[in-house]
Length: 444
Image (cartoon, rainbow, N blue to C red; front, side, top):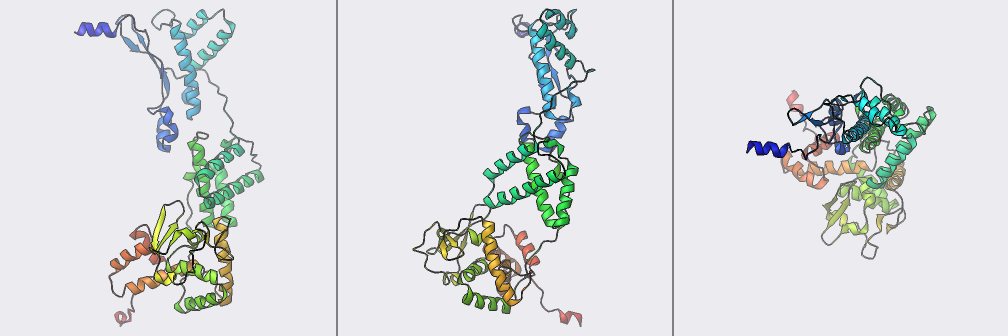
């Protein structure tokens, strides 16, 4: 049986060589774009080469031949290495099919090619190039493809347009355009290769953003630029997203103050008399604990008065369902005759068309409320968001009268819509909703 096995596997009908293959550091080259940065780095840290086996005339078995690298590993990027090795593989397949045998006198691949193709001028030129590349001592040259900055940015913006919300895309597009304008001012032409933008270049730009605005804006800009370069990596235009390696600066978040009971009552009384649309807008923030931008997204069809449910469309998340408390239902006008696809809030009426981006809607109501703040002499520390803080604080204190802190937070999480208990606890600390009782007796 052993002899039969040997005869079958060493049959003379089989080729004397195996198909040349390219070793790419132990990874599937076709899945390169799906690999992590570490996986790519590990693969490029290894030697890449073409390998094949040839039948040993003495044993009759296929024997692995020396690896052919051709200087490919001098390059630190996937594209250059694979380009060289692909040419070597194709050339090796050709000479093997023409009868090249590493065990005969013509063991020199260069000599074999010269003899085989001596009278074919064009082919001689081609094979001389191949021989030159196969010899590790010779320097291999590759024509690098230039991908202009302008073209790279347009590609990313086109992709982001399809996957981001209008508001997110508007912010992203604005930041990328400002970066491109800065590059031009720094004499970096948009026709230059995208690889001409270095880590140092981006750091210099982020420093200019920091000096002209704030650490928070600088960090947000860094985040968008990182997203830009990561998309280029994913599309195999560049090899590395160096922006992700740039540090994030400490930035103190700006948070609106909570209104006192007197301030809140006075503002409600004033709004009811002066601006009914803004008054109802504020009540949705206060009683349903919505963010101002979430109120701007509400449409007539999102309000189910029969089941007392509110369908809130959060950014890049599934629709959230919240109950509508009776205190808010009593304030709502008749919505039955309105178009279901109309927005609940517009500048002129409750229920109507309003064709503009969310940022513009939120800014409109913020400007309207600025007039109210000016009337009461309130500074920049107060805003529409303050009502959310105010009424969550009210709710917590009222519930804490008859329940333990854990019970209160468990019920409160369902109302506020925080993702988890940790997020809610951090929020409550930030707005100082939880304060201790008077501890004077402990100091006596």
